[in-house]
Length: 203
Ligand code: SF4
Image (cartoon, protein in one colour):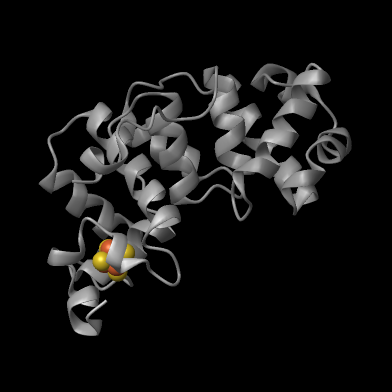
């Protein structure tokens, strides 16, 4: 239904694999427009590649990504990820790759899965705050379950396809921004007839 409503989302918004990874790290706790400014700055300064970031000083990276907030932490995190990805070899073994990526300082499950799915086309399902909000309002989850429990639920109910996981998560984000906001716009929502929250509150 969301696909019918919004159409294909063409995610991730990035030209290259390296740019997708960089965006996935920088987007934590900030709006995408701030990430775009940081990516433009990195690009202008020859740093829109993981090889270049892995060799660069953290302080210089931090100065270029200031628009993203928490820039000192994010610069260190970005360099950690770049160092890891430029040296880690076996990127086709999804489970091992994920476990190794999760050991990189500052990388949580949402960031790791965004990198695996959108940069490396690996079959993982990304769970974010929009997923928890929308599907708890629908009455499908409580919203407080551990990350992996929710992720597994989606993987077991959807066709095993990177393309499906890619599009499904992108549509969730779109719906969370456009309709199922903090104050939901239920009267304009295609899911309202199936939504516990809307039925309870007669929105
Ligand atoms: S009906 Fe309202 S609460 Fe339910 S998914 Fe739609 S916008 Fe969210």
